[in-house]
Image 1 (cartoon, rainbow, N blue to C red):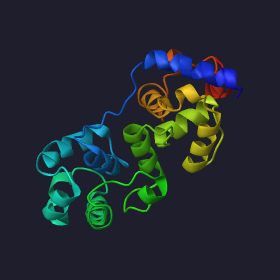
Image 2: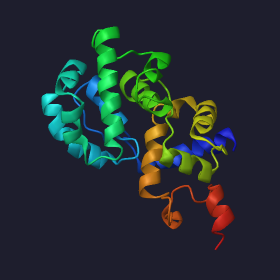
Image 3: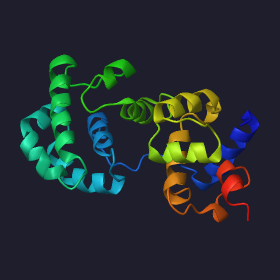
Length: 212
């Protein structure tokens, strides 16, 4: 897809989502990171519901370690994969205490070395908290970017590499959220609402599958 067309895609979508930002509720950098970890294979709504009570008593890694894995599970048991997430969060919190003086490292390599923090989570954190121009790729971003034709990549990591290379600089900070919202509201996995999509005249998927 040509740069001018990519620019047009984001110009159109930005009108639909004029103030794209995370819907996760958080108090500080630490609670944001915890929310992002919890959001893997879960909805923001379910995460916010669980953390509403959790973040009243836990606001940093020290308090999380004091809470402990067993008690943490009681707060997040409604979220998918909560057992594994609880274990990773406690491990991560201990590392932050012992190695980083209760602070979260800023560099990407250190972030992804933390338990439960992969490429997507680290990218979301750097983009939302540190204003680093990264395009984290979740299932929505992957689906939308490949359907529309922004990229044709087989994996999330390759999609991120491609998007960060081709997306115009002015959109790098907001592209992640714009594509997520479009995937949630319009370009759904099943029965995408192509007829009311702002970029349906550009979209490769509509052109190839919905000629009528």
